[in-house]
Image 1 (spheres, rainbow, N blue to C red):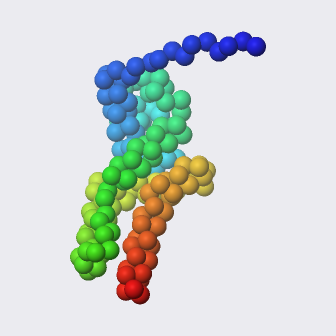
Image 2: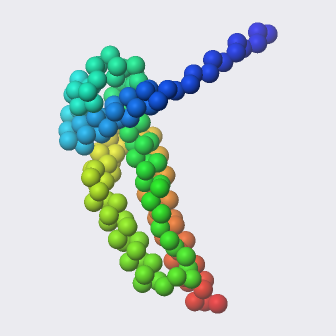
Image 3: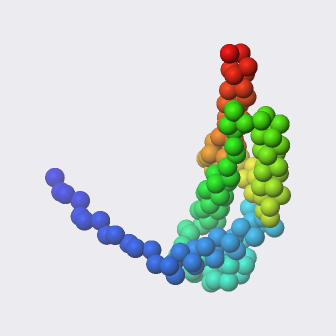
Length: 156
């Protein structure tokens, strides 16, 4: 039996993180403007201000780049907090939820992100499934839990 060799630890520099962010920002703009099918790696490289070679250093292909954008979008959307405290006034809670959700959807690229993921979900079902579970389903479940807690409180 051969023991595996030591794993090399690769520290990500600020420059690499910055360049990756630059690529993701450029790619997001292209995907939102042209959709997945209309986007090309050349167009993404131009939008990001990098060479195609640099683009391929960070992402193997357009699918991996798109998945990275969806992952980033999921992380951003999970930061949006809703206060579903059952002790709080119901009208205030629901109004705040609606306003926050609409602001989130109306931010630049907000609704476009959902449409883009939905459009590609048939070809990339795993991406669509993760987006649904981690963003949409979690919000639906939190709202349903809030409604159940209200029914339990009134039944007591």
